[in-house]
Image (cartoon, rainbow, N blue to C red; front, side):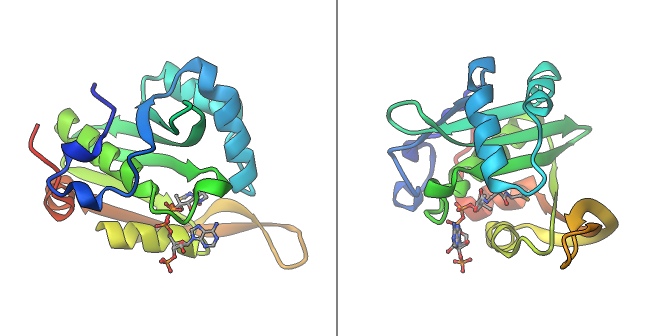
Length: 183
Ligand SMILES: CC(C)(COP(=O)(O)OP(=O)(O)OC[C@H]1O[C@@H](n2cnc3c(N)ncnc32)[C@H](O)[C@@H]1OP(=O)(O)O)[C@@H](O)C(=O)NCCC(=O)NCCS
C-alpha cells in the first residue's frame, strides 16, 4: 500500500490543502499520540486498545504527520466485501479547520479503489455538524439512521443515547469528484 498522498497524486495539485502534511501507515509507536488526540476531540473516545486492535486486525490505519513527523490526525477504515467502512477520522484541535481531513478522505478513497471496494460508508453523530458538513461536501449522502447508536449525555449530564446518521458514497463517484488519478 502506498499510503503517502502528495499533491502530485492529484489532477489538480492546487486543490491539495497542504503540502506540509503527509500520510503514512499508523505504527504501534504512534498509539500514544493517537490516543491523546482521540481523548482531546471526542466525548466518548476510543481506547488506545481499540487502535491497537485495529492495527492487529490489519484495518487500514493512517496517520497525518507534519514535517517533523508529529502525528496531527489519523483515519481508520475496515475493509468489507466490496466496501470500506470508515470507522474513525480525527484531527488534533490545532489542526482542525484547515481542510486537512480532505487529505485523509482522499487517502481512504484511494485505498477503497485499491481494495476493489465500490462503496464507502460511515456513521456520524447528527450533532457533529462540522463532520456531517465535511462528509456532505466530500460527496457522502445520508442513507439511514441507527436509533440510540452512540452513548451520549443529556442536558442534565445523565447517560443517554444519540442516533447515528449512516452516510455512504460510491467510490467511483468520489474518485471523479475529487479528480484523483488512476493508479
Ligand atoms: C470533523 C473533522 C475531521 C473535520 O476536519 P477538518 O479538516 O477540520 O474540516 P474543515 O477544515 O473542512 O472544517 C469543516 C467545518 O468545520 C469548521 N471547523 C472545523 N474545526 C473547527 C474548530 N476547531 N472550531 C470551529 N470550527 C471548526 C470549519 O470552519 C468548517 O466549517 P464550514 O463547514 O462552515 O466551512 C475535524 O474537525 C475533527 O477531527 N473533529 C473531531 C473528531 C470528529 O468529530 N471526527 C468525525 C467523527 S464522525
